[in-house]
Length: 188
Image (cartoon, rainbow, N blue to C red):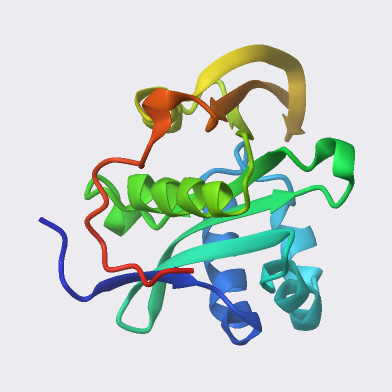
């Protein structure tokens, strides 16, 4: 069972500093899984980070906190264009290494999918490094299916990495509610 000190909630502009800190940890931990480099992330002004995580009708970023420490993040965004409004994009999923293997990533994914349903999205897309077996397993066991691989999607220090493109369909009968939600999460 998860520690009661862990809470899941949408981030807001006031969380920009802790979000930026955890993103830098993500880049340091998994540079082939995060698009900005550490240099790019470090040079981003805090107000730009605040805008990146601000809740809007098109985006939301969830965070899991251990008291005041942000330990996990996941973002969901959708296009403002009517013809693309049926789908969203999951991005930035990361859990601090000291908090892995206790279900935080699954909780974040569940919160994002629940919110996607409330937005009336029919599918959520994501991209995952093909060498990130833990993340791929999470997505596959959560109902995501792969539909293609982008070869050489990222080049990190001269080495290329492939990314699998996946989708989780939300408009099917078997997709009622996301199972296994154990963290305290207020309705968003």
